[in-house]
Amino acid sequence: MMENSKQRIALLLVIFTLLKIGFSDEPIDKYLGKKYTMSTSENFDAVMKALGVSMWYRFLARVTTPQMVLSKSGDEYTLSLTSLVKNFVQKFKPGDTNTIMTPDGRTANSTITFDGNVLNEIESDLNGKVTKIKRTFNDTHLVIVLEVDKIIAIRTYKANKQ
Ligand SMILES: *[C@@H]1O[C@H](CO)[C@@H](O)[C@H](O)[C@H]1NC(C)=O
Ligand SMILES: *[C@@H]1O[C@H](CO)[C@@H](O)[C@H](O)[C@H]1NC(C)=O
Image (cartoon, rainbow, N blue to C red; front, top):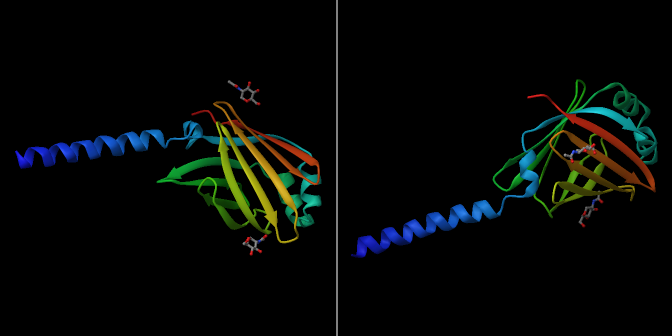
């Protein structure tokens, strides 16, 4: 009898944990592990200039085609940006503020939140520049809109063929 109720409690705990895991899934989790490769970029150089990014890095940004992947381990997400010249990894939990090194080498405080299939980031760097980055995921595309000082850049990525 005692053993039986203990087992029941254990079973309930397992079910409860499974439900909790189920509910903590974000809509954006649908796109985890999907690789996107950049296909078009508009006005990115102007945004980098406004941020004071070096000419050398801006040159590299012009000649490389990055790939982006969102992944998740436990409740921590990782945004990975890879290209022939640079690999950049950003780990975050939605809503937390982390001090990061941006891909172009600036120190900034970054906060990322989710809104459905959109990942919204606010980066505020040591020079007081605030960059808003909106990454919208779907099955075929990842569209990244960056805004600083009212200057807007749009970078479109296409999902790789599986
Ligand atoms: C990040 O936030 C901390 C705490 O508010 C602050 O001390 C630090 O100066 C900020 N760093 C940047 C790069 O803005
Ligand atoms: C995915 O995003 C691209 C780029 O914004 C858009 O053209 C396409 O219609 C979207 N696909 C769906 C299914 O919403």
